[in-house]
Length: 80
Image (cartoon, rainbow, N blue to C red; front, side):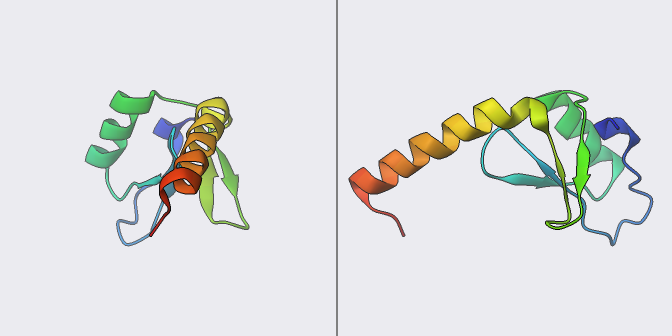
């Protein structure tokens, strides 16, 4: 399934989609979906029923790299 195929008819429903960082983008309407596609592309997604979010395997390498760099900075500078 592609991001453009996610059903966002119910604007009260929380639809979380992974990004290239450890953050998730919430999509509540068509405008937010278009913003996501403009920034990350109309990528292939898969729904994770346990975490209740759409995962994006094409972002995994970038996401893992970001998380490793973030952990290194937290060790160096501390975290909140």
